[in-house]
Amino acid sequence: MNPVTATQQERMMDSMQATVNGQDADLSGVTSHTNALDWLRGQGLTGCKEGCAEGECGTCAVMVARPDGDGGTLWTSINACLIPAATLDGQEVVTSEGLDRDGQLHPVQVEMAQRGGSQCGYCTPGFVCSMAAEFYRPGRAESEDHGTGDHEHGPNGFDLHALSGNLCRCTGYRPIRDAAYALGSPADDDALAARAGSPAPAPVATRLAGPDGEFVRPTSLSECLDVLAEREDALLVAGSTDWGVDANLKATRVPLLVAVDRLEELRRVEETDEAWTLGAALTLSEIERALGGRIPLLAQMFPQFASRLIRNGATIGGNLGTGSPIGDTPPALLALDAALVLASREGEREVPLAEYFTGYRTHVRRKDELIKEIRIPKPLAGTTAFHKIAKRRFDDISSVAVGFALDIDGGVVRRARIGLGGVAATPLRARDTERALEGRPWTRETVVNAAKVMAAEGTPMDDHRASSRYRAAMLGTALRKLYADAPSREEESA
Image: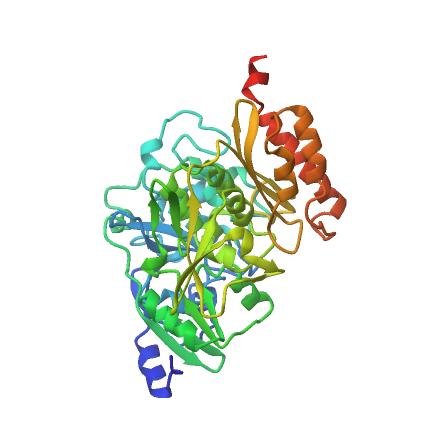
């Protein structure tokens, strides 16, 4: 792909625009590294604020229109501080300022005000946007039971995890929860609810260039692969939940950003008799909805992966592509014996995930390749679990993450696959522990012996999250916990 010329730059940048709060907004002034938060604030929409600049506080939350999979629109909350503004070209955004209609506060804003959900107000617009996205979630209102709910779900069907990426430090969370649980159904004349019945904006080809680099959104996989073949300096971005942090906190810049999050060839979920196929550009939230719990190990992992705000943007391919040793998807996918399909202009090749990582944030993927999809073979193991050890229950980075997938038949471990994260320079399989389990009875004696082996897997490090001794101890404890949660049928009947 040839560099963008000055004439092309002027033409393309002049044509870039987004729909913000129902109005056309000009994107022509953005650069390849301008994030959506800064651009929105430059439009005078200062309810959207910067708190942490790394997607943890939710102060910058906005709603974007995303496909719901059935021809309609799903209002989705994301962190505006992380995504390049250029990714909004042709797209539709709603900020806290756009929720009211004709001077009337939105139901979410009304409940937050009436129930004391705002004190200093800094975080409130972000809470309001995340809460509004859940307010419009399909099926939420229909799940109202008018009872007491539970400590994470309201009687109105509101899932409190929708706010897991929004932090407050002055009001406290009870009045915010009370506001969320007081919400009813959208009114018949609610414009945003009506909008959800129409298709979401389609992705558009976007190209811009400037002093700090170029941005490209290809319209097809083949076009994207051409770019990668000709530009070794290209960096792939999807949800930008990893790259966006570096751009914000380290001022990292690259010559070319290539957005792949809307490539249809990378956005399919397919089930056959032999395997599940998950498109690399699907967000974790999209995969979670599409699977509906049919891969139990992933169903256990998803709620523990960061926050809903992050999962709404982060893609499964991006989490693998970074090569991070503390990503949460690799341990689960290693336990599932997953393989990656890598695509380039030369063709496709399949690489077992266990052979993908080569060192700290390094892998076998070439510069001209991208992760197209993840394949999970069938049949799935009968006993699975995902254990994440972190300082917080949710919205935190793993100190240790373990994925288990065991086939236990007749009280004997016939097959064991165990994936580990946070205990070495790369995610890895606990192969010595697998060998200590396979062919042996699923008993306390076997588990205790295998737990000693597992405690020595990897090369646990000391850092601010945990000591090496703690990590080693947690490895052995994880296997004993699995046994306590899944004893053999023989012991259950004894």
